[in-house]
Length: 397
Image (cartoon, rainbow, N blue to C red; front, side, top):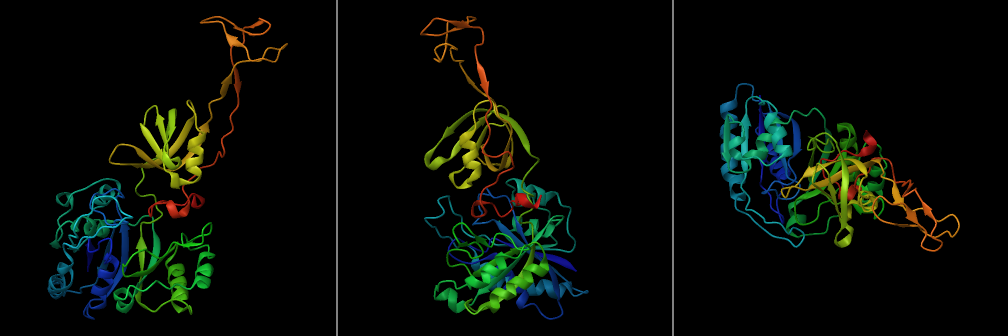
């Protein structure tokens, strides 16, 4: 018994590592049963990621026939996976630098300790840092393949991924998913991030010409299996090649450290409403235009406010906010009004009282503090169509 991991077989306009695994296990000799397929998301800023930076792994039972399995994997690698190397494509939706595919495949007789996974999900790592597999093939993809095997799975959700037929992919046909069935799926409390009810956008179907028909996320394996079958059996869903229910680290917050608190020292609003929050101890925080309530709360903040937050530190050092709340709102200060004239009093100078510019009356009360109430005192996070795959919904806490 051992673990197989695969990564980096896809590019922006084609391929999917989940499909690569599906094709491999669909052709495994019958003497090698398999179990526990897993889909593992890694550090979202990894330089050579394609889209969601996911790798896959699966447990295979060898029963003493490991040599035969390794020979099968060697042949499959050379015939099916190695030809996927050096594919590259660009897209107007992805402005960052793209890298050629560099597939990797690993075989571990036993799962190594979890340290490498925690590094790979929270920061940039190199192939040299990955633990040595019992057998390995390929290049950069060995990083993700190893991390997927090593993931301890302490917190997990599930995703049922189905794939399109080759005819639909080659013909670049529009994806067809039954919207009535999707509404039923979305109303199941055991599923999540299936549809954006604000815009009615489908969140389970990717864009572009990748082989995935849909990826349905759920809290339990049973819910993923049931709702996947419901969608596939629906009248207006196109025929699928097949599906697998993966255990995943999605919606676990594995990529985040503990929450932080800090004091706001300044805010500035950029194009489209993106907010830069400068803090006393944690540098710059970014609330992007797409972050919804977080953006609106960030625009309300003023110097002196105490906030609690979490998010990933990007390569430029700024923290991209994924959740935030106000702990203490600094009061708004204003000069008092003259009791007789109802005119705002003005300073007479340093260490001097304030004076009414009209009647010349003075006061020793230099400032009045007015309570500020934030738009919300609760934790806030971006809307579901702007969250990371790894982000845990607040209403689960």
